[in-house]
Image 1 (cartoon, rainbow, N blue to C red):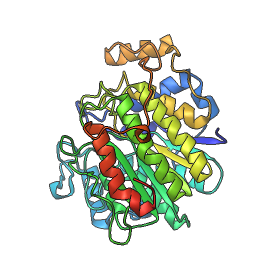
Image 2: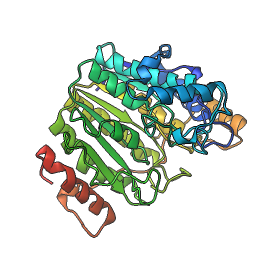
Image 3: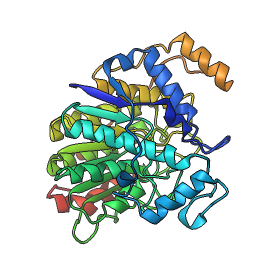
Image 4: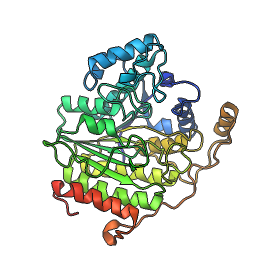
Amino acid sequence: MSGSALAVWDEAFLAYDFGAGHPLAPQRLDLTIRLARQLDVLDHLDVVPPPAVDDNLLRLVHDSDYIDAVRRASADPKATDLARGLGSSDNPTFAGMHEASALVASASTRAAEAVSRGSAEHAINIAGGLHHAMPDRASGFCVYNDPAIAITWLLREGARRIAYVDVDVHHGDGVQHVFWNDPRVLTISLHESGRYLFPGTGFPDETGGPDAPGSAVNVALPPGTGDAGWLRAFHAIVPALLRSFRPEVVVSQHGCDSHFLDPLAHLMLSVDAQRAAAQAIHQLTHETAGGRWVATGGGGYAITEVVPRTWTHLLAELAGHPVAPQAEIPAAWRAYVTATTGEPAPAHMTDGRDPRWESFDDGRDLTDPVDQAIAETRAAVFPAHEVEA
């Protein structure tokens, strides 16, 4: 399935740290890389460091005044700027904030460059996926919007059609905002409905600007949606749109906060379903985009039970050497988790669920909230893509 695959990684990513008690704990990255290394996943990836930070890269998406404000807060964390989201409870300021945030953005663009220029078929930055940041402000734990920056870089390189698929439990509002009126970028977000969850957006009637009808696709799922319903929704929406749009590159965001153990949201997915989503995106990338795939991490706040397992599966899928669902987790990694977090570690690589789903097209029940969400999204955007709703 996969050709060459590249991962951008550096322990410097751990400096993206909002402080003790903040949900976005950098430890989740450390645990993921340690687990992937112990399962030999990294042996199948070309692991490279991110390039040096470049403010010109950030300016592809972010306002200069905002970048200057981040720099001031970075040098003096007391220099908060709440109008720009800096110093809020979601985005507390910290020393080195600019450098840490910009490094994440440069890493995602390094991944995009590898795919664009053919040195890798697939590339990933697990530290990325900071999809809430807006051009002029921080939002939702995100300072610089690395997926939007990477996509803009690809457009500058000459890409004509890019599909962005976001499976984080929260709506990918920042990326949607940046490309709202750009017909070259198709943004697809599957998330818990904004009626119940931050950022309160991402409804089916958000479909793109006047020059880009149907370019924004939102699947707003009800709380409690589990494996079968989520996968039913994914397969009812994403494949048809990617086949119609025929992107040159697929960029994906793999927040794993849709898991039933995640403390910040209310979907009920298992690691098994999250693994199946990565497999589906991989297959669709080969079918529709010649295999050109740029992946990022994203949210995920069950930092021992969920994030390391889901993202190790993602890394392995991208490398073309999947880890078996029933695989046992190495004892050394489990001991490290207990020693560093005081929490018990999972014993196996998935939750032991069977992520089966039934096709929406084989029989829909419009009294079911998931099917209602699917039908609303298809009615809103499928006609613009000349796809039967």
